[in-house]
Picture 1 (cartoon, rainbow, N blue to C red):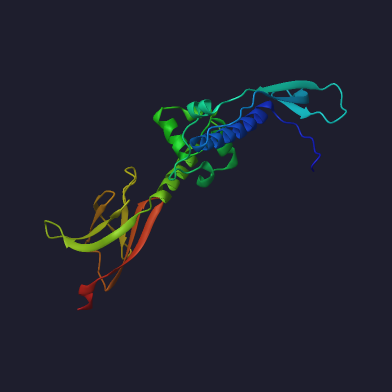
Picture 2: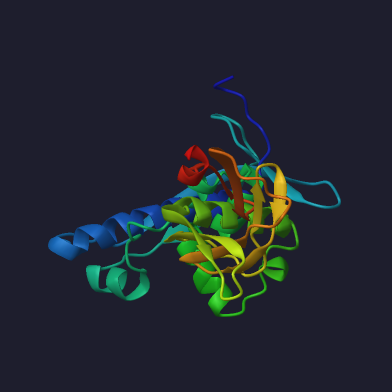
Length: 250
């Protein structure tokens, strides 16, 4: 209902206000690139008439309705800021290849927790990691970091998917048959060894990096005219390729 008056916490109110102010500051930072600010706001005061309550654990407030008496008054004073202050205190606008938290697909609780500490994108998370900040302590361990790490890895992989340029048959120095996979962004996760399956049989990956992968063709691999190769580069990048064997046509 539009007139429903529900309890709220001061922390939630201030956090929401700060997030909105940060958005306004980001907008001013973009505007200040081409047009200096032509105005300033000296002071803004926000008066809240509220009824506080304490349940033994948390302090909550209910906004006073018109005509209600006995309410407490809380005043929030906002100061002014100039274009020089905006440039000095605000990070650069988001770059094109950065990914916002909303694009990662985080749950609302995790996203709000990160936004409260000023983390709004993968770029922000990277900066925090570089400074060795313990996010668990900052966020009171309320975030599932295993899930967050997986979502970040998936998002980064989405930005740099594997691309195949060429697949060819060759012989090793010992004369053993092998497949040479060439492309971009192939094996980018050093913690995950790539897996190859040729015609439903596991194949040994001899070597792999971002651009080249060598796969051994063993005696268990019977090659036909058309062959199916499944490449698992990491948990977020799996490709299925049909290999046409011209020799089998003869």
